[in-house]
Length: 348
Image (cartoon, rainbow, N blue to C red; front, side):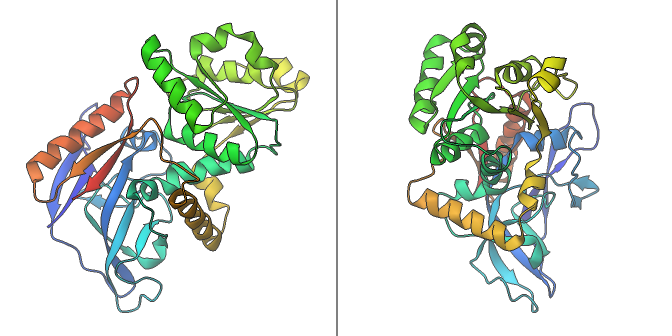
C-alpha cells in the first residue's frame, strides 16, 4: 500500500490529511518511483495556505497532494521508457508533482536523473534550495572578488548555500539573523563563520553597526521583506541590486523606497523565483548542474547546512506513528519558530 498526504480543503487553518491507496502501476510511458527523502520548504507552507502561484498538479480524493521537491528511486518502468531504468535516482523537473507520498507514477519525461550523493538529504533539496542559491550568486549581479552580498534570514538553508557558492567566487557574505539569546546567537555566528560567512550579525546589531555599510555591498537578498528588507536596500552601494525572494514577514508586507534609491543610487530591484531562474537552463544544463552539485558535495566542497537538518521518519510499517509525526512536522513548519531547522521527511 502506498501512503500520502493531501491538503485538507476545509477549515480556516490549512492542515494535511493522511491517506492509504493501492500501489499504482506505470503505463507505457510512465515510471513508478519510490520516494526516499522530501523536504518541508517555506514554499510548501505558502502552497498549504494557497498563497503560491504554482498549484499542485495531482490530487487524491479531491484534495491536492503537496510537496514540490524531493528525491526518489525508480522501481519499475513502462514498456516505452528508454531514458530511465530501475535503480536510477531522480528528482522532479518541475514544481507541482506532489512528493509528500511514498510512491508516485509519473511520465518519465517529468523526471531528472541525478547522481547519487553520500547523503540523500542533499538530493532532496537540489531543485528548490541548492540550484536557486547557485542562481542567486551567478545570475542576479555580475559579482567580482571583493564584492559583498548581504542577506537576511541568515540561518535559512538557502542562505547557507549562498555563502558556499559566493565563497567559490571570492565574494564575501554578510548574514543578518533574527535576534535571539546571546548564547544561542554565538552558536549561530560560529557555525555560519565556519561555513564561510565573513560577517554574521543580529538584526539589532546590524541596525547599530554603521561600519557594515562601508563595505562594497553590491547584492542584497531579501527573504523577509518589510522593515528588514528596507535595511538591506539602505546598505547597497550605488548601482547595486536588491532581490526579493521571500516574504517571511507576511504576504501583506510593504517595502519602502525613496527617490534616492532609484534615481540617486541607481539601484536595480528584482523579484526572484527559483523555478523560473533554474528553468531558463535547458534540461541537459540542469542535469549537468545538479550532477556537478552532487560531485562537489561528495568531494567535501559543498556541505549540508552546518546548523543542521531535522529528519522526520515516515515508516510505512507504522501508519499511525508516521501520521502523527508528519502532521506535527507540518505544524512546526507553519509556526516558523525561532531556530526551527529545515525538516526532511525520510522514508523507511
